[in-house]
Image (cartoon, rainbow, N blue to C red; front, side, top):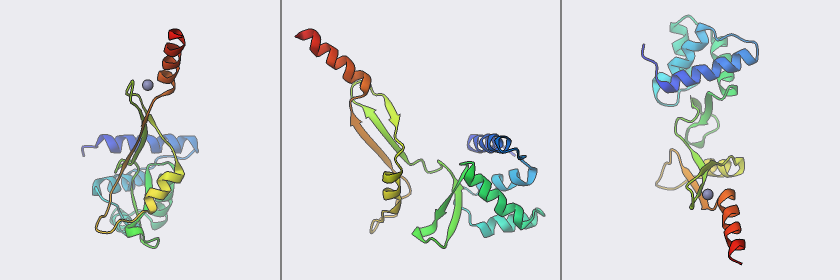
Length: 157
Ligand SMILES: [Zn+2]
């Protein structure tokens, strides 16, 4: 089977997490991870369970693995249509929500981590529009450019 770069990265992340927590990346865990990535859409726990049953993987291993993959930041839990009762799993970063600052002088891009904003956007509902992901860009002047601009000003005086 040809593995995608995304899947390779996910496996590497999971392996790192597993070794950090003195666990092993069993073939069962890897199979579950691959199954979810192959679907190319959010996967319900019941689907993972069905797959596992075909592969003779126990139900406990499925739920344990899903939990671990979320902790390892490989998968995230998503609520279908904002319904807390319908939980599905999808690869983290799959839809590429992005928050960044961009300097208008030098073009430097800095990632923003702001849980308050991302929670706000995640909770947002738009009539007649079902959004899948977003990009938030804050424009301005970076620290380095501001410093050199200040120097420039002082030199002129
Ligand atoms: Zn700059």
